[in-house]
Length: 174
Image (tube, rainbow, N blue to C red; front, side, top):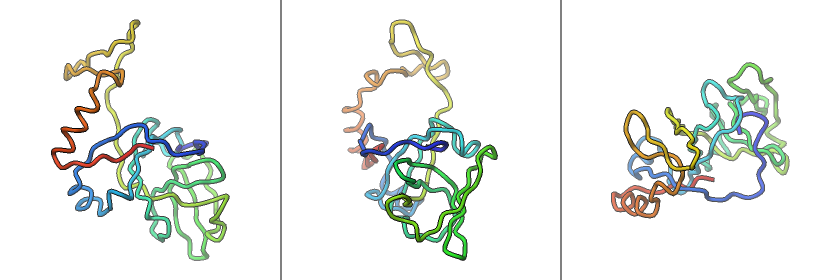
C-alpha cells in the first residue's frame, strides 16, 4: 500500500483487467508476462495515487537505476513509494504526501528485509462509485445507466471471453 504498507503472505489472483497486447508493448514498452495489477491502499502517495487506485507494476524493473514510482517490500509489507537512486549506492524513499517522512535505504541491504518488486508503469482510477442499497442489489450509475455494484452483476466469464477474442490479454490483479 501507499501508506503503512500491506502485508504480503502470498499473491492471490483476485480478478482480471484486460489490456491490448499491442498497447502494452507499444505504449508501456513492457512484456505482458512481467506485469501485475495492485490496488493502492493508504494515503502516502496522494495526490499522485489515491486509495483504491489500480497500478500496473512491471516486475522486471528490479535491477534498475532509474528514478520513479516503485513497489517495494520492507519486511512483510508492500509499499508504493517514489525512489531516487543516489550515487553512493543508496535509495532515497519518499512519499508524495508531505505528511510522510522520507528515508534512505542502502542498495546493499536488498535481501530478506528489503527488495524492489517492480516499477509502476500505469495507474487507473474510478471516478464514480455505486450507492449502496439496503437489499445489496447493484445500483445504477446516474450518468451512464450501467449496472454497477456487486461482482455478480458483471458476467465476468462472458466478458473475459469477448475480450480475449478481441486479441486483448488479461493481467491478473494480485
